Amino acid sequence: MSSSEPRKADANKIVSVTMKVNADASSIFDLLADPSKHGEIDGSGSVQNASSTAPERLSLGAKFGMDMKIGLKYKITNEVVEFDEPRRIAWRHFGGHVWRYILEPVDGGTMVTEQFDWNGSRSPLMMRVMNYPDKNRVSIEKTLKRLADRFAP
Image: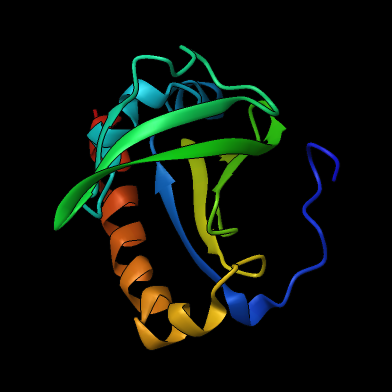
């Protein structure tokens, strides 16, 4: 897969929310490319901290661990699978689903689209049964609000 073009996907397996953020795409991308900042904007409440071995700045193919908590604490390793600075960044973990951010400059800021893409999920039945697409839509909305608040004047 190229760093800037995702594979053909079933649109029904992509949860996508867009919000305008009052900042330039480079500033937003810088924040997204720093795994130590992910917990500051995470709307799900599950992202705690980047592991001590995570790179300071992500790049295509970079692997980074995160300390997580959904009920119980656990660790997860992600790999950056899309990277087109400052327009797109995405990572995937062992479950096969992808978290993607697409940044589009507009007058007065950037339209930020966050996506939960479960086309590559290793357990699509569990995604449906556990209602993860709908739950993740709510978390994405909260994440984008936190991101917008961070750059609010």
